[in-house]
Image 1 (tube, rainbow, N blue to C red):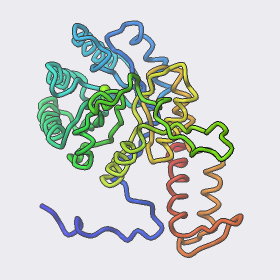
Image 2 (tube, rainbow, N blue to C red):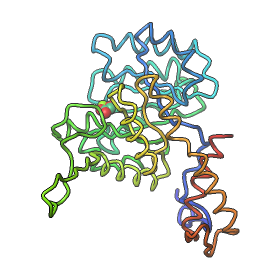
Image 3 (cartoon, rainbow, N blue to C red):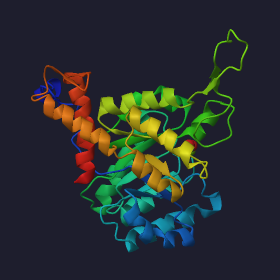
Length: 336
Ligand code: GLV
Ligand code: MG
């Protein structure tokens, strides 16, 4: 039953946009590993202290004849590892595959108390989240779990993008949404053959110059539109947005650029597919100390958060105060 409190928002003078009241847990990098690969599974204890989230991947990149091995490997890793403050997530197979049901049955029944978040690929609409939500509720009740397993959707089909708002608000279990640029490119029939990042052909060219000299070209971001839509949907529903994978492991500079664009737009983390990307994600998704110092200066100068002040020639008011609270608040939460 809806109560009066659903219809009234608290007064928000000085407060940034509200987020759902879930305890903050860092998730700057969601580090993927293949739990069916014994060599990778053996490295898990060394990886745990380096990452915010470790994700046992059961979906794409795990061949069809290794699905059971990956599932069993994840159960073994979940039981054997002390995760400390690091979260354990899994990416199950998509709901239109023959494996998703067994993934959920096995994991929630065997190690549901250790899994924080289930990432669901190729989500197309609220109905997919409702299905997973119901199934999780049944399996949790049967296993006697007291803490709900949360749900994270990958935005990687054109239909999913069209329905991103209903996906974000589909269940109180929703933790966040990641951009899945590789599948999304295929679903949209884009003419790329890569995992995330830009493309040298996607550019705009400077107007012809009067002197006939060479014209500058500017590469554009293929993912800006989708990221912005996803961030708005997540913010509106108080859940967290993430950049997904960046497939060119050698190109850490381009990886950093994509992650930073996502961070500046509102994302809180990205996937890391190789240990080399972990430090990049940690650096990018932690606010820079000079930005934090500036934000604290503005907060201090703005007093109760209303009115306007000039600092170093720049006008600050209620709105910049709220932005600064976002930046300083993130720094405080990460330091806690
Ligand atoms: C991730 O799953 C992607 O398709 O990019
Ligand atoms: Mg995908």
